[in-house]
Length: 93
Image (cartoon, rainbow, N blue to C red; front, side):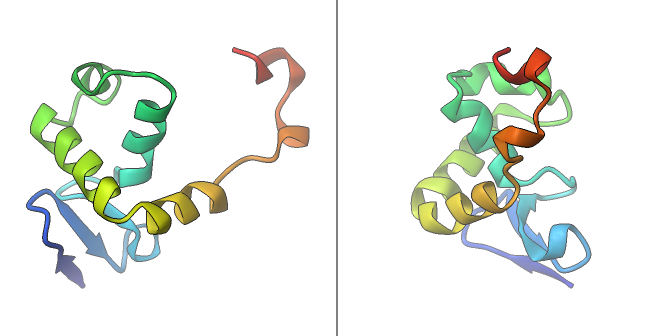
């Protein structure tokens, strides 16, 4: 079941990523946008790497994050790959 949020482009769908907040009409989680932004990618550049998203969707995802930081941070931590599992050849890219 798709559940709306207070953010126009952000929904929860029980069949997609276990109900994690995603961009409406996609399988892209809010955390993916937040992680790019936290790595220094400007919001205006994020749609270049995720061309199915609009700039409005990116900004709404960041707005959702700012309203729900602890929730999204927990999804980021849950999906983090432990350092010892990352190949040393790509670890520092």
